[in-house]
Image (cartoon, rainbow, N blue to C red; front, side):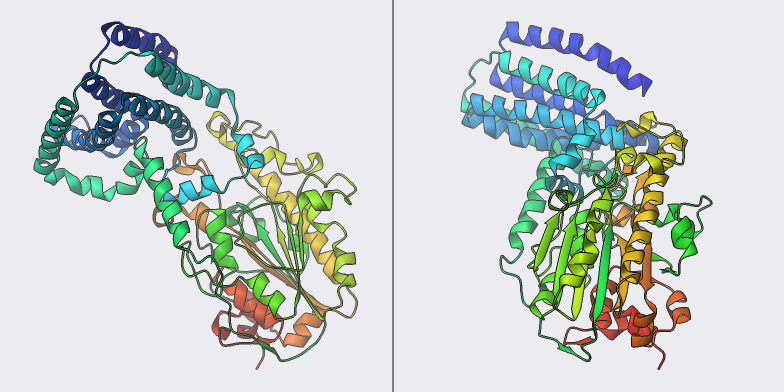
Amino acid sequence: MKSNFTIFSLLPANLCTFFKKISKSKPRTSTFVLLMTILNLTLYHWPLLSFANKNLAILTLNGMQTLLTVFAVIYLVTALVLYPLFILSRRLGKAVCVIFAIGNSLATYFVVTYNVILDKTMMGNIFNTQYSESEQFLSLKLIAYFIVLGLIPAWLIIRTSIQKTSRVRLFLHLTITVIVASTWVWQSQSHWLWIDDHAKQLGGRIMPWSYVGNAARYQSDRAKQNIVQTLLPDATFRSNKKTVVVLVIGESARAENFSLYGYDRLTNPLLTASDVITLKKATSCATYTTASVKCILSHVNTSGVFSENFETLPSYLQRQGIDVIWRTKNWGEAPIKVSSYLTSGDLKKHCEGLECDYDGVLLTNLTEQIRASDKQKVFVVLHQTGSHGPSYYSKYPKEFEVFKPVCRSVELNNCTQKELINAYDNTILYNDHFLDNLRQILDGLSQTSSAYLYVSDHGESLGEGGIYLHGTPHTIAPDQQLKVPFFVWMSQSFIDQKHISVDKLKQREQSTQANIFHSVMGAFDMDSEIYNKDLDMFEAAANK
C-alpha cells in the first residue's frame, strides 16, 4: 500500500495544476469532454491496471495491445455517454461528471481496500446494506479517497469554464471517436479471448460503468418480481403433537473456521461437548445476504436469482396455523407475514446483561414467548448479525476475546493475517456460546418436541487471494464464501417422535440451504403438493 499513498500525496497538486491550466484556457466543450474521458481512464482505473499486471504479460506486445483494447472499450463507452449529455446541456454534462467523480472515489476505495467486484450481486448487497453496517466502513483512508479522488476533482470540474461548442461539432467529434475506437476494438479480435475469460473481474473494476450499469441491472431484476407473493398450496398435518422448531440464520460464518469441521483451533467447545449434529459439505446458494436468505426461505432453489416471488417459509407456516416468531438483529429477508416480528431494538427494551448489544439479545424472554403460545406448533427464526465484517471485533462481548491480538481496523489489509483471523475466530467462539444457550432453552421446554437448525447465509473471505468480506460473483467466488456451517440439534422426544437415526443424519454426504424449507415441513409433520421428501433431512434419516 505504500506506493498508493505516494501517488495520493502527489495527486492534489497535480490535479490543481492540471485544472488551473484548463480553467485559464477555457476549453471548448469538445476538448473538455475529451479531457474528462482521459481523466476517467487515468485517475480511476489503476485497480484495473493492477489486475491486468497480475494476470497479463503487459510488457509484451500482445499484452500491451490487449490492455489498450480494454482501455479503448472504456474510452468508447465513456465518450458515448458524455458527448450526448454535453450536446443536450453543458450544465448537465458537468453535473454528471461531478457525480461520477464522487462515485468513482468511493468505488475505487472499496475495490482497492477489499478487492471487491462491483457486479450486479455486489450492487444488490450495497442497496440492501443498513446504515448501522455501512458506518462500520468509515475510516481515514476512505475519507482520503473521497476528498482526493472525489471532492477535489468535483470542485475543479465545477470551477472550470467551458466555451460553447456547436452541437454539430460535438456530434462530429463523437462520430470520429466512435469510428476510431470501434476500428481498434474490431481489429483487436485476437485479444478478446483473454478479455472474455476475465470479463467479470474486468467489468467490476471499470469506473463508473461497473456500478452504474450493474445498479441498473439489479433494479431491473427487482422490478420484475411480482408485487404480490404467489401463495403455496395448503398443507395437512399428520400429527398435532407439541413441536417447536428454531431456525438460526447465521451471518458471514464460514465452515473453515469451525472446529467441528476440523479447524485446528477450538472455536466450538460447547457445541463439541453437546450432541449437535454437524452436516458435511454444506454450501450456500449465494454470497450475499438477500439472495441467500431468499433461498433459505424458499421451497425451490433460487440460487440468488430473482425468480417468481413465491410465499416464503415463515408466511406459509403462519397461514397454515403455525405460530411464527421472527427475531432479527440483521436485515435482508423477503416480505414476510408472521404473528410476531421483533427487531433487536424491540428486544433490547426487555434485555438485561452484557449480551444485549450482541446476538444474545435475540434470546431475550424467548422461553416465555414460546410457552405463552396457544398453538401446538411453534416456528422461531433468529436472524443473527453473526460474523459480519469488517469490524469483527465489535460482534462479541469482551469476555469472548480469547484469541489475541485482534484486528481493530476496518481497513482489513492494514492488519496482519493473524490479527484478522483472531478477531474473526472470536465471533465464531461467541456464536458457539449463543447456540449452546439456545439448546438449553429448548431442552428446558417440558413435554415439548424441539429442534434447531443453524445455517449461515454465506461465508467470508479473510484476505485469501487478496479478497475480503463477501459478495463475490457466485461463479468465481472462493470456497470460503460458499462453504458454510450447518448444524442440527434435536431433543430426545423429537428424535423419538420422528423415528430418526442420528447415525444416518450424521452420514449425510452433502447438504444445502435448499434442505431447510422441506426439513422444517417434515419436522412439523406437514404434507403438501410442494413438499419434497428427498430434500427433507429428517425423512431421509428416519428408521423405516
